[in-house]
Image (tube, rainbow, N blue to C red):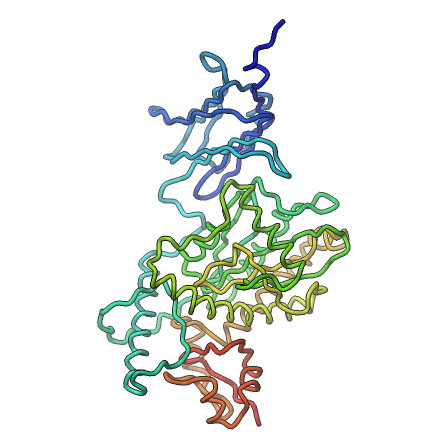
Length: 479
């Protein structure tokens, strides 16, 4: 029998994998070779049809986990004229998207079909847009009031280094009369790394990073939600994939005050162990290990089929300049400050891989308006640490340590309009060795006024850099 060229090039569907997320479902076809695909919708009843040219099915579609997805049933058959037809019976409106991926270190040829749900959020209980608008207006009013006071005190001079969220555009709206303090929650975006077809690192005993970090992220979110004045937003609350840019965008959409990404990475050697804390580096990694880890994490978007860059194309040129020149400095300083406190807490319950906050170019940290950290809770490639990372008691200890570090920072530096800021203003009165920052203040001026060196003032208040905020209470060390 003579076999035609088309038969030699035929692709076999070796497996199909499905992950359901709150705002989409992802169906992946694992193929022995590249195949042309035609994807289209049909109505009455609602269906999505996936035609694969010169392809054959060699897997059982009845094992696909359809619960929680938009798919009620999967049917397959041979298409007229040859090739494979897969029909998805749908239970809701979808917006389909598909693309092919070439082989990489983990997978062969793949066809990815995303079923996106219009109007749905990728996180549970998204913040009400009215609430978000009120928050923005409050910050805007505070900014206008601060600028007015500064002009009265020191016309033409730059005053306190108060960096406000760059998403708030200048406006001529008059300042509204004072309203009751909103006492809002401080919002912590908790991101469990990897997910779905991206398992992350895999330990010697087969433990998958994506599973371990999701458990720790859920425990951390529970700690945050159990503390008055704080609210957690889980960026990923299931086994599904989210792109790196999407993770930071979700945090921004939720008006997060802080973004923390949880990982448990591996190294080429089984010897490294211990926890590490990373902040973004604007000039490169601070160590060879940091660079290696950043490269491995940033490659995860290639697994998911998207690139890992953060686009600012939707921002005008002036705003881009503000994001890069001002806010990145402020958020990076906050990240380093919080990172130091988290690292100190982690060191009390686990060995530290590095004794200081490392800096590297992780894409997931490149949200210029949100302070952020990436925490490696341990090296899953180390057999002993892999075992501990599976232990619920150790997971709880890690989540508690992370939250303790975050809480310590925000109790000292509560965001405007937050419950903690209200408690500070109404319950904590500055004593003789404390000073509340006013418009026009600088660290150097405060230090001179109280007769202490600037370095001692920074050290006493865990300040990195020169960024201070109006209303912040400083401890004045004894000279």
